[in-house]
Amino acid sequence: MENTVKVDQRAAVLKRRSSAGRIFDFLKKNYFLYVLLAPALILTLIFKYVPMYGAIIAFKDFSPIRGIMGSPWVGLKHFEKFLYSPNFDVIFMNTLKLSFLGLIFSFPVPILLALMLNQVRKTAVKKNVQLFLYAPNFISVVVIVGMLFIFLSPTGPINQILMHFTGRPLMFMSEPEYFRWIYILSDIWQGAGWASIIYVAALANVDPELHHAASLDGANLLQRIRNIDLPTIRPIMAIVFILAAGGIMSIGFEKAYLMQTSMNLPASEIIATYVYKVGLQSGDYAYSAAVGLFNSVINVILLLTVNFIVKKLNEGEGLY
Image 1 (cartoon, rainbow, N blue to C red):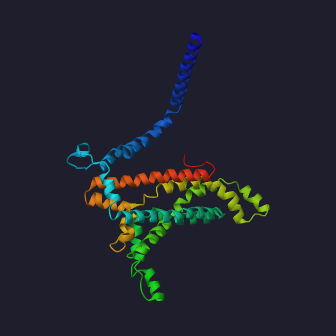
Image 2: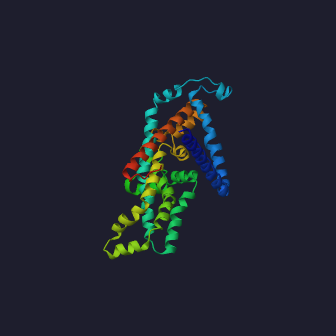
Image 3: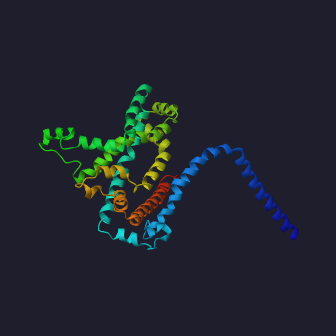
């Protein structure tokens, strides 16, 4: 019996050593790949993980003089302050509405563009169309907002056309009801073309013989897209949708802040702009950190929830 136990122990030790040896041999063989990966990992650790230490000020009455560790602990005081503040409902709902509407209307557009581009057979025409669609992505957000203020101002070209029909201009950049649609439509114009690249690349792997065979069998264009193209890009669509839903509360601060006016504030004040105002402008760092951490927790919950739902609907294929 003892001999059997000793043999089993030796076998376990040899197995562990062999596993460790295989890992060591693999690392030794592919060390150059890990050397290439090292800068990205180091930068991620420095700029993504190390700053997480500062999130502790959300639970403290932070004072720059005392420092993070010297500031007194207040627990969930700042979170309660935000949740019970009179502005919470407006700010939270503005963020959700802008995010969900942006996701609903922005997500399908790159897919439609990729499907249409895939039908263009002339290479020169396709490249020119792609250049036209990708160009807005390289325009600065500041320039985009400046263009919006110029084109949608009371004396801008859009209102000049409207005045011929209605006799009065519309205050696009001042009225709250226009803010969300201007934000979303300008986002689609700027980013949809660039977002379609991943779908165009996936569709390039579709065998043309499949389309040819489907055409011989009598399938029309829509049937070929539904049965050949869409199944090809469906896994990518699932991953992109999960990532987009996971960042649904992380609306770009710059554009929302630049588009804000005193008149459209009831619709344009979102969590990102609120954090900036109470944190950097008012100097309440602990409170702004609590609001930002609350926003991040909501994002994580949405990411996990959407990933679970998509995996159920997509035959187990999800982000992880």
